[in-house]
Amino acid sequence: LLKWSKMDFKKINNWTGWLVTLIACTVYIMTSEAASSFWDCGEFISTAFKLEVGHPPGAPFWMLIARVFALFAGDDVTRVAYWINIFSALCSAFAMLFLFWTTTALAKKLSTQGGAELTKGKILGIVVSGFIGAVAYTFTDTVWFSAVEGEVYSASLFFTAIVFWLILKWVSNLILDKKSQLKEQSEALKADKKRETAEKISPVSADEAYPA
Image (cartoon, rainbow, N blue to C red; front, side, top):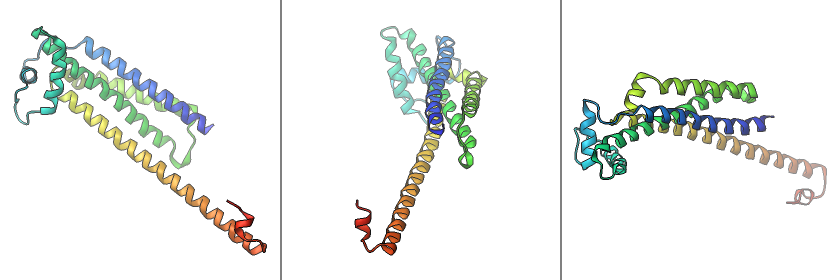
C-alpha cells in the first residue's frame, strides 16, 4: 500500500502542479498589458529592446531574456512591450508551479513524520492544500500586478521559488541516500553475524556455508 501511494502521489502532484501553471498562465496572459505601465516598466522595456543599460543594478540577465521575447514582435515595434509583458506572465505562472510543489513537499514531510504511511486521504489533503495555496497566491494583488507588466519582479519571484524548491529537493534526496546507506550497513552487519554464527556451530568455513 505504501509503495502504491508514493507512486500515486507523484503522479497526482505533477499533474496538479501543471494544472496550477495552466490556470495562472491563462489568467496572466489574458490580462497582460498591451503596452507599458507609467513607471519603471517603460525604461526596462526600452533598454531591453535596445540592449542598453537601465538604472542600477541594471538587471543584465533580465534584459537579455526580455530581448529574446522582444524578437517575437518582429518588425512591429508597437508589440515589443506586449511580448516583454508576456515574459513576466510566464515567469509568474511558473513561480506558481514551484510554489505548489514546495507546499506539497512540506505538507508531505509533515504527514509522514515518524514513518507514517502516505494514505489516500493524506494524498488528497496534501494536494488540495497545495492547490488552494498556489491558486490563492496567483490572484493576490502584488503577484498579479507584477505578472502583467514588463518589470523584474516576476523573474525574481520565479528564481526565488525554484531555488527554494531545489533546496527541499536536495534535502529530500540527501535523506533518501542516508537511509539507503543505513540499510546497506544494516544488511552487512546481519551478514557478518550469520558468518560468525556459522563458524561457531559448524566446522565448515563460513565461505563454504554461505557461498557468494
